[in-house]
Image (cartoon, rainbow, N blue to C red; front, side, top):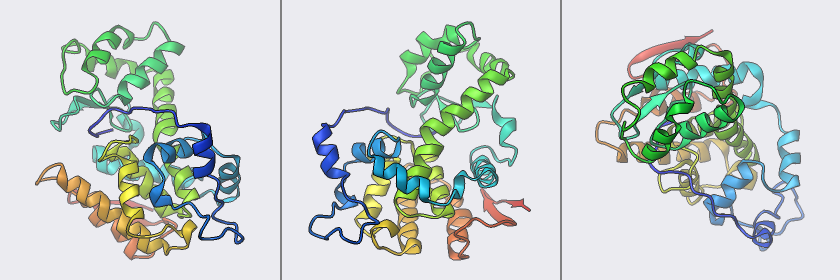
Amino acid sequence: MRRSGILLFAAAPVLVLAVLLAFDPRDPESSPAKRHSAADESREDTRRRAERLEKLQDDKVVAEAPPGLAAPAKKELAQQLVASAENATLDWRGTYGHIEDVGVGDGYTAGIIGYCTGTHDLLTLVERYTRAHPDNGLAPYLPALRKVDGTDSHEGLDPGFTAAWKAESERPAFRKAQERERDRSYFDPAVRLAKLDGLGTLGQFIYYDAMVFHGPGVDDDGFYALRERALKEADTPAAGGREKTYVDIFLDMRREAMEARGTNRDTSRIDTAQRQFLYDGNMDLRTPLVWKVYGETYKVP
């Protein structure tokens, strides 16, 4: 996952969290004076909420929402959409062993979601995998992975790490580990928060793709910062706003952040894919689906 910045946690006091998260957006008795504004919610609180660390009421809201992107067919479509932008393919299962340095300052980018040696998520994946499978072929590189975390350095990784990654990716256990980490860090929190914000299937995918590209961190160009900026411009459907308006503004925030990373940054995953779905009114990501990324056309029947 390509992003700038390492994830840092700061535990919030329980009392503060209870106050921040007390408002039920579905409760008509909640007065505006008492309602907590989502725009004022800290990024860390929002991240914790998305990762299911807070509030039983949120669990109820999510459980009662339609499956949306979490439905098996839609989740498969989501992986295809992401793979078209990340690896120029619809065959996302063919990318477990993919690894390269794409030259954007994040070190090696690898696997089904673009785990990066410079952005902490690849290290987390290998650490978790090694706890369950201590003798795996990537374990000897853990000291080097910890050393290069947060940088674009290959120190201690070359020349053998890329071969070790490809070899380990032939093992079903490591493939499952990649999928579990994708769901734990990206898919599940993105879909959960999108449902809490009242977004449908398309909005849930847009959150997911943003979390993949920008990272699930609380740094200034991470996913939660983008959502924070969007909330200053429009209300979520859960707060009474129009879904298309809010999603359109969120995509604006994404596009600005992508362009800020470099003058030649391609934004077609937004322009000729996600925003096109939005303008077509395809809020449920109905198939057949046709989109373009980097000038290539992709189709799912």
